Image (cartoon, rainbow, N blue to C red; front, side):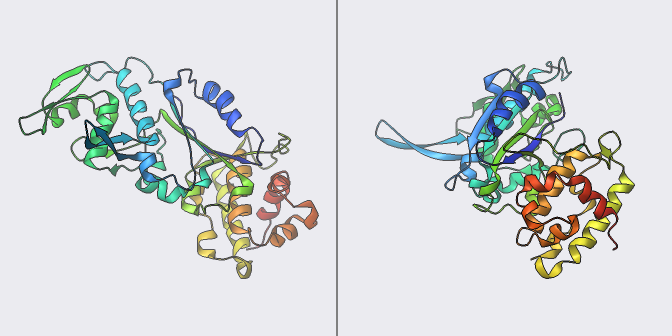
Length: 347
């Protein structure tokens, strides 16, 4: 089970972001070959939490209206990841093989209201070093029953229509949730209290057109939980980093960079709205901090969220003309000079 990818690919329209996900990341980085392990959706202004997690939908059967709960794209992806983990273990809970990876692909992530769509799922995006969500969230009874159903659980009912038996192959004939819990502890979700976590074999990949970023505002807390990858229109790459050893920045240098960067941001407080939320914490990028994360996640946050209204502070810092700093592609190519000047900035 490889380290999960939680990344937004961004760039101009038509730069091949979706193609890169389909033809490179999914087969090569995640090793996914089966269509059932790829769940795709597209965010749009009418897309809701119900579309993402699940919702009741009325249907008419023999003249009567009934309501069925249909799992959303996230719930389906989560269930598929859990199912793959279950299938990789025997009836005694011993792992026999590595679980197959699952990818949830979200195209146009900023064309929907991501904060409203993710809702409480937002909390799950913080991942531990082992790939599991740091924190679990409670979901509703109907969502949880649907999740168990999608994993492959069969239910038994009493004469009042209440569930009194749970059957999950190879653990058939389990009467109570507490008993089933002990048999599938490796899934790391709480059956009794209905608490779920994203497992390490579930990756979430998204695309976004940089020019469309203002369609729906993505707050800093949401952005922080993703890795970012810029795809330039001509597919060019920034020059090799001069500030890293082996592609990573040591912790002391990272702390100095953040201290100086926050000093630089604070020195331009007159042109920055909500400056308290624009300063950056040490855990904005978790260790190890790579040059790729600096060029994409950190620099895009500065470009898009901190100095989005006025690029003059960046122009002055880099000692270039405004015509030389028009696009984010221009900015990321100057990453060596940017880091060097920030490291020398007098706080």
